[in-house]
Length: 142
Image (cartoon, rainbow, N blue to C red; front, side, top):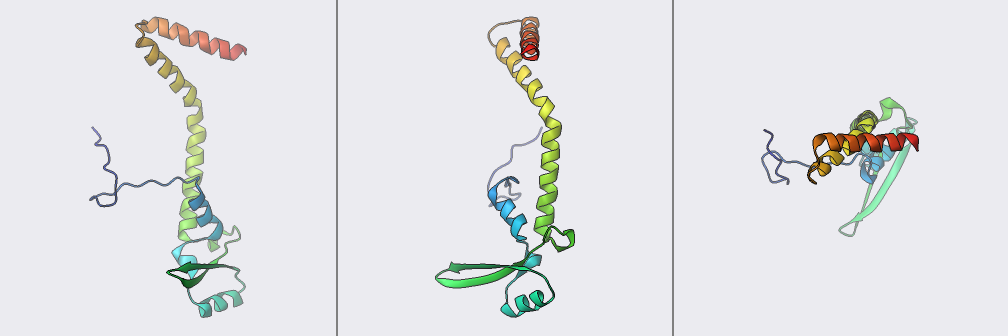
């Protein structure tokens, strides 16, 4: 038996989720927003730029105070990508691979849903299977 997770960050073992296809992970990947690729001082930014690396300037207000930082652009070079960028790209690739592998099962799940709903209408299992086969034959002919 697997206990359902208790959501929230105040728990002993917090459970959270991250949609790898949403805006935030894509921004992290695009701008290389990773602690190991963020520069917080002007002097360090100048030094990094002098070593022929391109930087993305980040400016915003926090409590009415201007904040400034830079992220090192990765230009799709693996060695230039930060930890967060590398991990998110890896997880995104695994997610896409899994979605591709699970795609053929979607039809089978829909068939099982049909069997379950048909059995609720007092159809026998054999009648439900016949109905599924008839639907499959229709979809193959169309």
